[in-house]
Image (tube, rainbow, N blue to C red):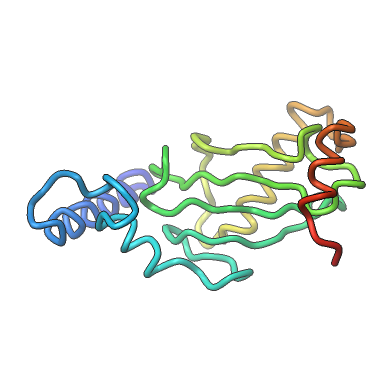
Length: 157
């Protein structure tokens, strides 16, 4: 059984558990107290720790010298099969980043993952592929309006 099939089996089992916890109601993802979101919060990785596959979590990686805060979706995220999506956020708005806006979504990518690859290594690998393919290998400065916004939002280290 391949990764996609194993991932789908796990997703189906998780949906079944959530469905049962919701008393047989199909609204398992219908709001913050719905079973899928209760399960997601209960299994969220500790702050700053790299999540296991299927967990939600936030952590920071470095890609070609740029610090990137990753928000990893779990098994209930949009387009999470077979690979959970993630979003990349700027950490240092005054330094070059992977986009001019300080944000980039990586939802819906379906690359193959070598056995044993961790979610943080996966994020680095996918971002490097994106940089090579879409950005000619180069990081980009944030546009002034985004740099100003993120400078106001991001506390100094």
